[in-house]
Amino acid sequence: MREIIALVEHGFAFFAGQGIAEAVAKIRLRRWHPHKSRSTLSLAAVCRKEDAESREEDIAMQVALQNVALPARLRPPVPLSDEELMAFSAANKPCKVERLASGEMLVKAPSGYKNNLRKAYVVHELFAWAEGDGRGEVFSSNAGFNLPDGSTLSPDAGWVERSRVSALSEYQRERFLPFAPDFLIEILSPSDSLPELNAKMEQWIANGVRVAWRIDPFGGTVAVYAAAAAPVVLDRPDVVEGKGPVAGFQLKMARVWG
Image 1 (cartoon, helix red, strand yellow):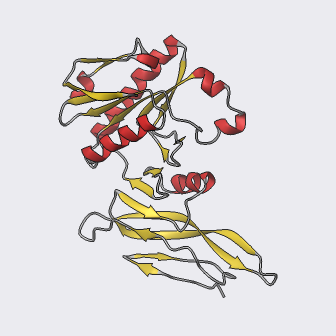
Image 2 (spheres, rainbow, N blue to C red):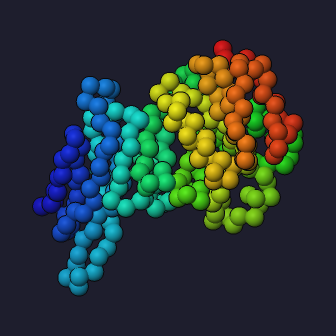
Image 3 (cartoon, rainbow, N blue to C red):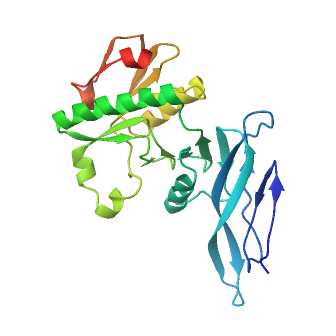
């Protein structure tokens, strides 16, 4: 008979299969709002079992999280490996999952219609320019970047010099990129906190990003971040011009403001 171990805290439970002597994985949910909208996540956590020879073996455990309002922060007992994070992200599409420097996972709801159009437009424009420019590769929000501070973050659009990507092995190219992008764009969504997104922009710069744009379509501003410089805030510009690694790139903003 299948052994079931259930640990319930704030409306979610852990289930483990037969043969598990001790479930040591306990995930602490920091944000839970019982009166907000509900979402269900499937979390690949890690627990341990000891066999007759007292060997410990890590095994995958599927965890159902219910009554979770997004965005949410989840703290595994130990930070997830790249493989576990990829599996968790794949199991929870189309939610966006990032690993914070603290080891927590930030899970965000998918974009709504208008914000998704904004993101698609920005990626398209950056990609079209990069194809003609030839110096770099473009990434969408599905790409993860392992940063020096231990986090794994995903910008809405990113650009990396081609020589940096070319130096990676085929194995590395199938995983999270082991460095920060040279240039990126983040777009504020209705569920985002502007102060938290601004803090994320500072984190990007601190981890090696050379130039970054934070677009607030609701306030009508673009904040331009660069290493060793204070952010420059543009008030509802018609066009934003790239500098440094993306000199020559121009983003027309009418479709972002519309």
